[in-house]
Image 1 (tube, rainbow, N blue to C red):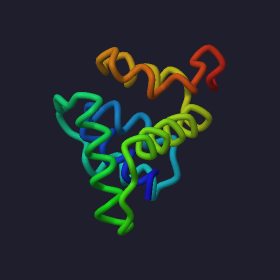
Image 2: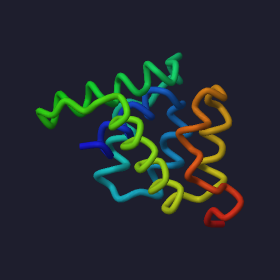
Image 3: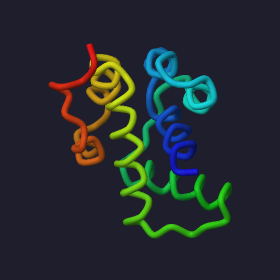
Length: 115
């Protein structure tokens, strides 16, 4: 649930090209989640992003995660993306997000990403 919710919300926040570059390095099912919402990069604050992830989790899992739970889920999913996707692709997407998103990526050390 958390992975799908995070990828869908991320797809809404980054451009279609960025989503495609990341999705191409993921298993098809996960890449499709990211691509499904991609297009024009939408304006969405970090709070709005986390709210959207929480809404996706609630809608699909019949759970009601707290704001802290949602943030932890997003950090975990982004960390897993950091282990899977080449650093340059993830860093390109991250660089286009406002600095308020930086704490969500703090578990990822871009200097040690895959080549």
